[in-house]
Image (cartoon, rainbow over all chains, first blue to last red; front, side, top):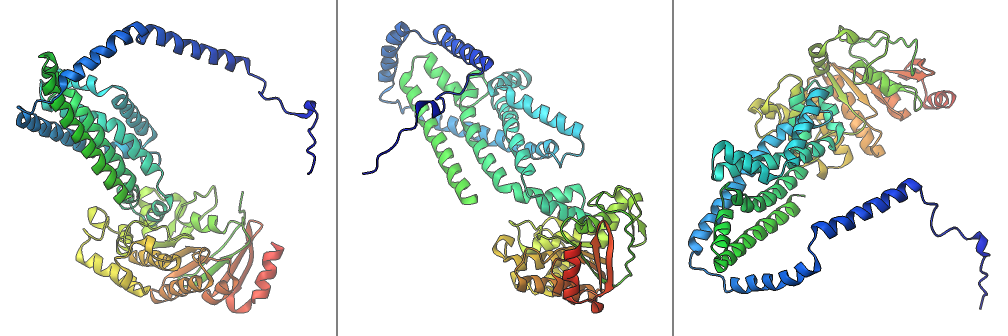
Length: 268
Length: 231
């Protein structure tokens, strides 16, 4: 058996690289902030101890789900899905030109590109519930406010991804069309959009999934959909009806996600 | 500066091969002809136009008269051969009817099919580019160029990314088509046998200038190989 010779300890590299003092202070500060946030904003152990039985109590009062109003709930769910589809469609259609204006190499001018990028950032940064509140004030209670809120939210997400997908396409076909004298629109429609389409379709399907989830909660602020039904059920302590609503929402969201996933795999 | 004091006249209807070692500015030179690379100085006259003085619409008009074949086919691989060839009509038309063969007018589709026939790929019209071989794809790119009805054909190493047989087929197709259309052909090639066989004149670049300029019949492969080794 061969004897393994251990090198002298002084030849071994240090286990830890020399710590940068600034990085060390920042790490400690972040860790302190996380702990502080958990202790001040998070639930205390006492609250958890009191809250868990309450959750158990609510869950036990939800079963069995009440199917008496199932026809009304399903109709409301269908309207919610229509709201998601309409908002998503409007948002996606508007995201294509906005994405083109925001894409490097396709935007007609750097200033227009910056403006388009800023608009997308605003759409993305403001949460959909806030857009819903704004549109409820602007166009009144009901699904039109929800559709507009979803459309804006979709634009904030899709336009950014559309722009990135278009930027990442092969520059060769664009150069070839430019060399034969094609105009900018011809280049985009003939070379860029067909090449970016798989990525754009995948993004669109994800947007529909996202919009379906969003459409459920927008009703809580009066922007139409099944969210109103859910809020009323909880307000009236009709937990069995609430359970039915939650179950049908779950089925819809899972169905949309599964269909979207299947379509994405087929297309890409 | 890649080139300086370079002076070159090419007659209408001639076939000229441009050769030279890597980095001598062959691609830059032919790209400058249609301002795919902006020339920093000098004077370029092409098809009666002073290239550097052209405004955007003028440049677009000039480019529509020049067929450019690249080293890579530069086609949209997700689209059919026919749609890619239809795109060539954008040199003289615009709008949705030029974006896809689905919307193209009957006469444009018919012309695109004729162009595919000329490169021997009519039976592949509806095949997606990503299902074709490299040589077939390059021939589709030639068909797209033919849709332009060009007066001048410029090819930047169209045989470079192909195997010897496919490369030769593409070069033979290009030379024959340029001949049929009475179009001028300027091509860059690293394959000496192609430079000699498919051109009437060979221009060698070296040191930023024209270092060799002879009729193809007056040079041998050995002489061209020596030229490469010297420059």
